Length: 223
Length: 235
Image 1 (cartoon, rainbow over the protein chains, first blue to last red):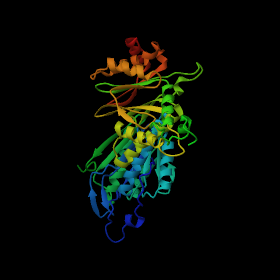
Image 2: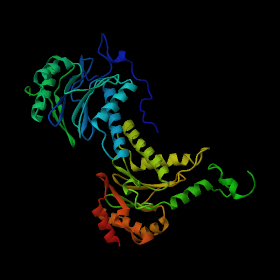
Image 3: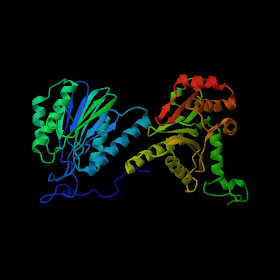
Image 4: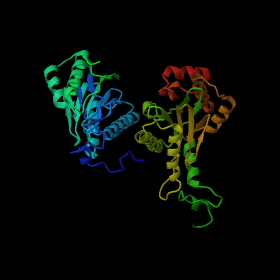
């Protein structure tokens, strides 16, 4: 029994980046960020899904998926692709646990994720964060299988705006609260001007033994 | 065929004898009977799987003897017979469980997994060039209620309230037939399972027993204290 659910051909890249008209495939558009604090990883994401940033198809999207007891993905890209990608990582980390009786390391999970991306036509640009014996770890992944470790990261259509906040506010050894505040600021700031991002905020704080989610329906301050 | 003697019919798994038997499958069942016993007992809230973990020598690390295996964190497999064959089957079940999650985003039930592995085992009795698996599996899980399935080398699968496979299985099943009741608490189910393992030998080292419960919380190994208590209650 194979693991491969992708028997059908993937949609072409053209279909995902409509030129003149709103596309027919839901994209997250998205601003997602990750921040490494002293002992956790904080991931944050907006909650909007849209057709090419022109029409909002969903205002309550969960763009952060837990794929491991102490790791989560913040996802941007085509909705169908990111959902499939998250299912694959969840299944692979469970298989690792069944076979070896221990958890895959975050570096191992990131490498696995990059191998999946390199060998399948998935239009995604996720951020993977997790905590293991090595401490908090944060990686950006790209569609060609690139895997880059960093201390803070942003991805998606609002990434330039988010990076403006992160570059100014990030410092080493942040407290958990400060990390959450900076990540939230980065996402809400992007939502102000990026038409493909907005509709509130999800924050996931990753501890060595679990992931804590908090959702906000509207950006802080606007409610 | 080279003559009327029985020998000719056990050359291949796919050849029936004139009286309708598959000798290779029957030999595989003999291999199961020589394996250390495993038992399963379905309680009111959980299924318990227990195994006798016998080591060939005092120098063998018992933790390396695989008799009980987790699948998808919620299903458990106990195996008797050829350990190497069991590993193949267990990995097949693990992959199948994750395939189910990829396809439907839902957990595979113990029943689905038992059927899937049984289909694979059956194939080995009908396809040329293969040999049957010399392993019987007990598959325990919790799908709304506790479940317990058994597969044998023919690929047959049955659901049981309590059963055993491996050395002395027939005696253990008779013992369960006398003692089983349908409303066992988790601890009672564990005691009955351990008592079943004791049935053929009458005496066992607590270190030679491992057990798991499969209830709402999923696959939960029973700690040494729990096994020692169950052994005290059973003997």
